[in-house]
Length: 334
Image (tube, rainbow, N blue to C red; front, side, top):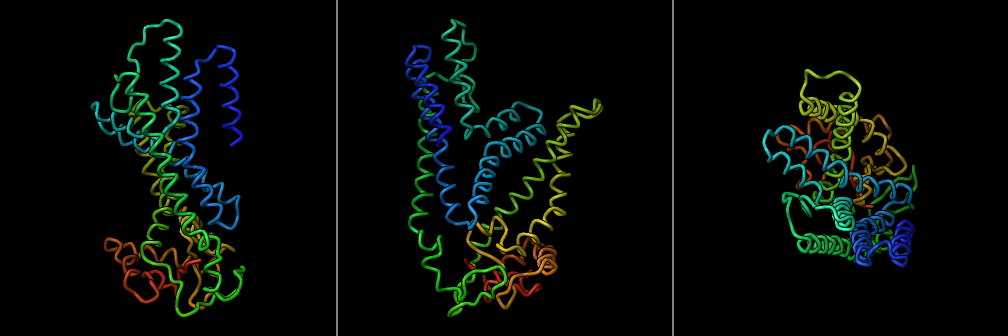
């Protein structure tokens, strides 16, 4: 909260000495507090869910990067493949969640009005380049309320499952204290991670690996455009090519990502940690790196036939997917 307090103090000071209109300070504080409320809520949830607070902070920052950078970047690449105006409109749809867009448009118009400059274009919103100040401000208010609502739902979920998240209610599910090399025993056959919990963890991990590699590919493509002579290749085609190369590299990057995390002290990838699940062998022991690697490459078989190997987890005993059966592993709730 200290950066918020610093910015608030800055605007309040300039309001008191007459250089900033009081409404501007109110507007800035509204955008900062409402838009950032969602990261406060996810940060609280992750810091309780994950054992290491530093890891929770890094994960929370990655969520913000994904929302503010990766999503607009991906929409930009896809939009460049479209030749007409609809491509620009697609790019703009990735800016609804950006607080910088609302602040930038507001300050631009405030500066023009203060300087007596004719405000060409005036206020605008994604997909609409000519809206009234009233419409723009009401939209900012509404989007801020949506952020607050989502934050409330996250905090409500955190409060409702607080004992489970911090391990108090679930302390008797696993026999010994969770240590790096302890054997995890189950009481009464409970504790197997369900299909939807596993599927959500998989989606988070795939987003981290594939979107991360795709974003890196875009950055490499931008670097090539700036450094090398690529006059014979349209920029959109070059960026799309490097984006696809980044996605292809995720198959290689995914191996150390999954194998190192699942054989670590945590026994879980970031996605699994967020969803409160972890991986063991059939006897509840921590996986060695070689076995975790075998589990990862077995996923190639699970992904064939439209991912049928993953859907097996919804019906099989102990909620095992095909790659769990091949590697003889279990996915348990923490």
